[in-house]
Image (cartoon, protein in one colour):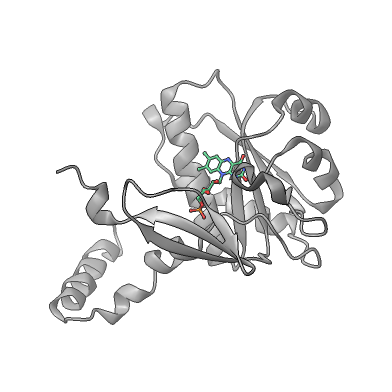
Length: 212
Ligand SMILES: Cc1cc2nc3c(=O)[nH]c(=O)nc-3n(C[C@H](O)[C@H](O)[C@H](O)COP(=O)(O)O)c2cc1C
């Protein structure tokens, strides 16, 4: 890149890794990734604005895309239309007894991601890259989100008058939850759980993610 960004980052990275406890590695991507937890309870007094949703969708013209086709399209939904989405999404299937979202903590903003073509494998790879990038942008803005694939697609098409098939709904809002990651081994239980008001998400330790 013309501004030598990558060279500068590489120099920083080298000087950080030369020191035992690389303090700079504590900010940046690792923090965004850790804060980017699936959120199913939101602060109802915080209404996400359309310009915030536009900024989040805005990451999509900087992303990799299979054959650079860029077939994804995005429908922002703010509080005035949230009632058109909420009845058709399902959250927290792993904690059915809680009937999430808890009343009064429903998300009030969404980005409905659609495809202009009948989705193929590469469309879903594009979708994953897009969803994670949008969520990281949201976290950088002090917001959180949730990928929702458990939704009633034809009802959403009708309610929002969508010209394309929806593949994913991303909820966006100000989190009202405390979420923590927990290290597990690959054969341990992967189910997320709640205890004393904290939502715990088990994650397989890196050592067990490596193919030996
Ligand atoms: C493709 C995809 C679809 C998902 N669909 C739903 C969903 O329909 N409802 C829901 O509550 N969570 C959904 N989730 C959130 C996952 O349950 C969540 O990522 C998982 O519990 C791990 O938590 P974490 O995102 O905080 O790491 C989905 C996540 C992904 C990546």
